[in-house]
Image (cartoon, rainbow, N blue to C red):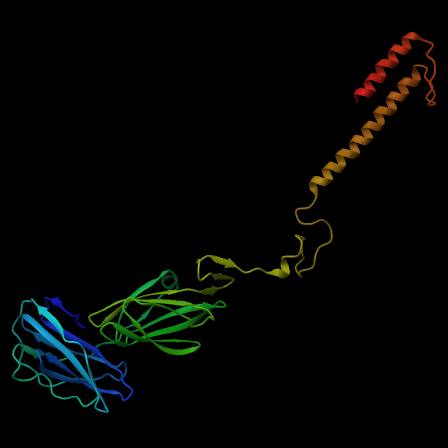
Length: 333
């Protein structure tokens, strides 16, 4: 970076670069308007570095070429840069390169007009920590080369520490390492790409999106997909909490169980209270009916009718009328 066709009002420009190679990248050179203006090595910790220059207002083209220890080279595409700033008095050019690693080389060319290399201050590596809630809802962060982010993925109620290190940054790619309890891996992502990772679980448990790379820093969004805290587990697809079931205390067929998981004899849970009430009503009805019939039979005998089951004559006409009324009452019952 800067990106191709970029425009800035800052006359102090940093040209970031990164390089990896099987034979180890040795050093890199910056070319401005086709003229070599500086050489620097590669930071061995993250395979990246940057040039920093104060440039006058105007339009520039630039590119970076890196070499490995076998003498092979590779160059970026030529990019354009426009500067529209307020240029203040500049210090004398410095011809000393402060790049580390590799053979180094000469700094800015003394005869190159409008170019001043500033004395570089070593960049402080930043270490960030994301909270559990931030990682579960989605955490956005901007990381530079060698910056670190630590967070936890919970499994079985225990927080597993995960460390993300921004290993190297290219123009449109970021190379990072992810280290968890299972080990450490190195991954490369391009701008706009998202990936799922399996760090602690057998299934994916971390989602990472590389939003973009700007000014030598990567804008990223991360979210934990699975987490087990205590007795609940978060579903990786719905985010809903799935409660664990203690089958030993649940019982079978809806029956109550004791603390040892054994079925308690008797009625089922939520049992037959309604059945008991119906049975009591039936018994009461039978008893009540028995006493009513017994009373009716007693009334019939009092009228001179012998309850032997045989049909008898009624000598009293008035008694016959009363009998008919009693029998009608029995029929209505």
